[in-house]
Image 1 (spheres, rainbow, N blue to C red):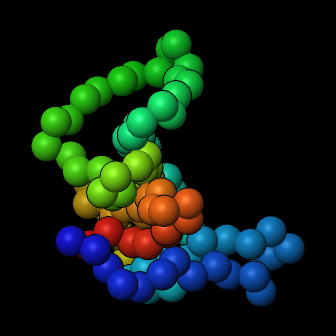
Image 2: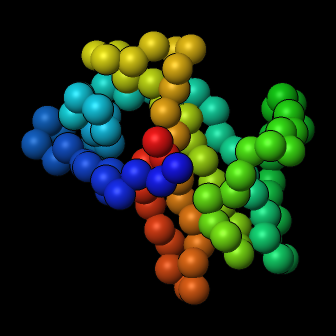
Length: 101
């Protein structure tokens, strides 16, 4: 299910912008995993030492093109066993960015 809430960026805490937690607004997020979905002629380059798993039930955030899901957990409100996902999806030449629910 898609969340209509776009990601927020903290530009005040540091001179490098930081992604904010979609639940509490805390900028102390940790990325926990990445899923790539290749649509068409896209190539994905992976470190040969990386652990690669496939999940046929996981759905591409883009309905027709390439997409990516990045798992995060928050130091303030989340735990490592229940991460949330930031989706990046190609759609008609645009990159859509949103939190997955």
